[in-house]
Length: 101
Image (cartoon, rainbow, N blue to C red):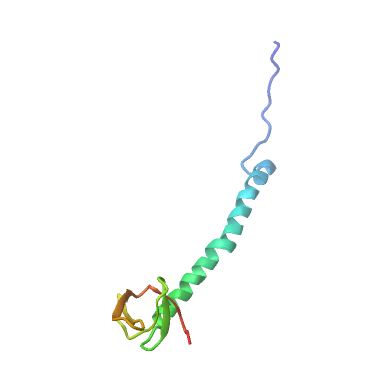
């Protein structure tokens, strides 16, 4: 009779303590969404729109730093003759900036 009867306390799934424990994880996810995920999606959307609007005569900079004028746009490749060289063929996703002057 030395052990007294233990009554269960009401610890549900949605206890106040559980909410306090998960709140930092939820806040971290929200911060990551607005600082990392959303801007990356916006940048990918802008890159896709720029590549779809790419036409002959546009000046572009490739990912490798080559500046040139687009001579021909084929579906997987873009012809980009750089000054003083032959035609360079680049993958269509290679140009990273257009609208140069």
